[in-house]
Length: 296
Ligand code: HEM
Image (cartoon, rainbow, N blue to C red; front, side, top):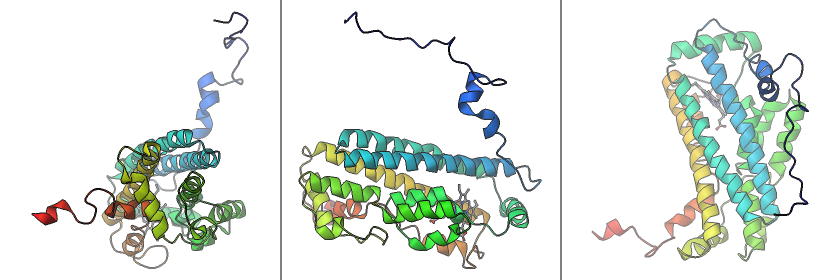
């Protein structure tokens, strides 16, 4: 051990929490945090509703930060660190999806007695007005410009989302990384207008097939692929829980756009991130062309 290296220990005497705070409350901002719930109704379950949505908001913001970090790591060709970051995103989806349990007790009467007070207090609301979810979705590569319309009252958030819409998604960075690291991809998959919906590409599917062709080859890239698949599953699971909660508490009545809410949500269920990572699975494996059960 080198005796010249000084290992400085933290000196608790030097640090101090602001007056009226403990170190814990100062760090976790507990007073601010617990001042952020303002119910609009006298329904005893509204605190559970607000907590559930606010916790989801925090997780979406956390996932945004992680996805942006993974993009920076991929751009720096640091695949190992990018995978570690993306594994955290997989982990965050577990508690995010578990939030649905906290409001599973709701009947239509419960939900509507809260929502009717929210409309009376703040006006017609929809969760489509939530910018964290939309930012996360844009980073996952599902780019739909029409959702910006909800943010005109929030110009700063409109700008933020417009930027996320026009910049590369995580998947775009994955493809660019693969291209730089020996997997030739067509220019159309790399140099494109990032604000338009991604169109799946056969050449990209072929690259994923090549990555998985040898079970013992490209292991780190296969790990990346499986981590992305886990993220897509976590995202789709959230959508499934949301659809079932809507069926349970709302039924087939018209929602924000005047169209039937369940029908609106069902058409979003096919929004699965990283499309060729999934479509390639029809051709990966030996023998690749048919399911073994078909030979019975
Ligand atoms: C359980 C009662 C709920 C019902 C009946 C419901 C209903 C709906 C409906 C009908 C839509 C489609 C857009 C619209 O017409 O507003 C929607 C979208 C959405 N809701 Fe909910 N929702 C519920 C709970 C929640 C909760 C608790 C959250 C957040 C934690 C949430 C987040 C979202 C998001 C992010 C969208 C946009 C989805 C997308 O773009 O695919 N919803 N919801």
